[in-house]
Image (tube, rainbow, N blue to C red; front, side, top):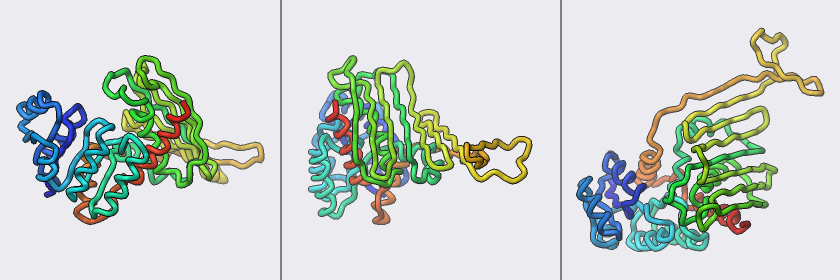
Length: 319
């Protein structure tokens, strides 16, 4: 078992602590949080060991799980890598692309591994359809959330939209050529609602909308490609796959047939895969353990996290 320690015991940090404590692939050594009042409360309530310093925790583990505010990701990661520790970093990877590039270089030269917490890659609805997503040419995403003061220290792009940016970059195998965007600050000092259009070298276009001042929660993405439409509901963990194939010579009474202006007939059929139940956060943490143990490539690499941040930064710079 890998010895792991968590940096940060806030809302998400406590979730990581609980899951790591349950995991059969990790031994939870303890955690560090600079807020000693909160740290002692968490330690007393759940029984996790609280370390007095970040250095003491890093020295005691094999893997450092960084679940601190984004501004501190860079310093925490640097300290862990300097001690030869593997790092799991919550998204976004760092505050700036330059910091992310430095972390990538340090990891590459230190014989350790790193993974970024883009948890939607492990959403069972996305896992169920990702193999069906082949060369999408138009993608539309809506990630809407009810207002929550937590996270408003960063633009909604880094808080919410970056999830969809990572998903899109993982399925579109082409370079980003152009980004246009607009954002509006309604209640925070940074934009609370944003829309972005990302154009790719292969002609694919992605239209993303994110809001943290919505009256309802929504996390939906639709992929359009030749002969297929794929919908993923990341919140409800549901998916829909609609495909087209050449229509049979003799159509059945219940077959759905479309005919275009040229007279070409296509049959519409539904091919909805089974969605397995999972805990996405536990899966991302445990697949990182597998990558360390087997010396294989993590599912969400530091490169992936850096590119998602790079595109997010391009969007923010449009505001």
